[in-house]
Image (cartoon, rainbow, N blue to C red; front, side, top):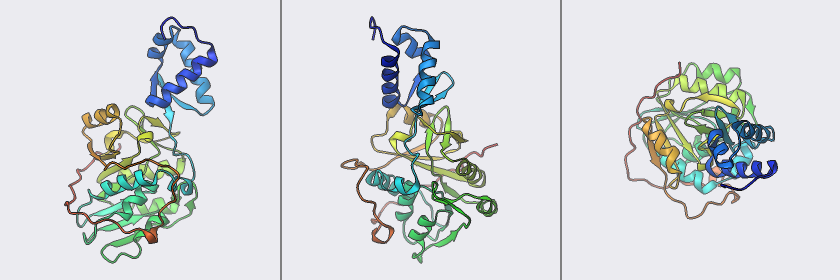
Length: 293
């Protein structure tokens, strides 16, 4: 970009393209590349954020997570990719554990893939996840009642919170909308973020499965630091830089199997039609995670 002059609108479009490509930008680096002041770059970032195209953070901006649609919309997106993540996520469960499955379409795929005959107890506040497991006789299912938030797809009201505060899950499958090493884990709904913080406080180990586009992304409501995660499940082609950074913080990273294609609009597999594949590997142990103070 050296030696080229940009009109303000052109500069914004170039910055937006960089955000969408890399997930994050730094104002100082952009100012050097565009040969302009950091104040000028910050104004461009503010304008983009006002249009809902990114989120301002200290020193730069993050891409806005694409996971802002309703729960029914999200279930129809990236079905094969979520299934691969869910299968890998399910493989870390240990015999006899109390597992809490948070709301989310990737966690729904994990519920469908839970190994047979491990003597586990599964709790959830997501009625669709509960319906997937209701017919299984090899596990104990606990459903958390309350008013279901249609955007979240689960009960996140005060009644559900009170019931969850009486539980001590060994392992939590935490659903997320966005995560970033510096900005942490985030959600799109305030009630959902509060529920997730409570689940984190009550749980021993915490596992997250994340699509590539949710890495280095942002959402409005803070949930917690990435350090609370014990196991991070990523796609086979997850970007190296954020994944390596999280590994250096002590997270155990598991890569899901590759999928032949990555469509986002294929029909959703309904719970009654899905038969989880057999597996031969024993699940790995999940370490205890640190708790939020």
